[in-house]
Structures are given as C-alpha cells and as structure tokens.
Length: 24
Image (cartoon, rainbow, N blue to C red; front, side, top):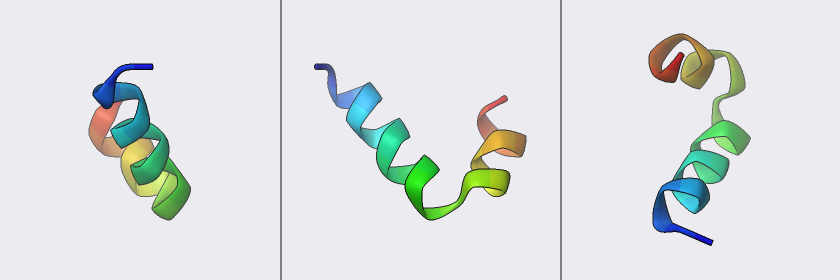
C-alpha cells in the first residue's frame, strides 16, 4: 500500500463529504 492510499483512507474516514468535495 502506498502512503497516498493510507492518507486518503484516513481523510475519508474523518470527513467523507468534505474530502469528496476537495479531492474530487
């Protein structure tokens, strides 16, 4: 697993809607 995946999962776990708007 890459660091980006872990970071994304971590962020997604905390803020689902927020990350969706920011990353997407």
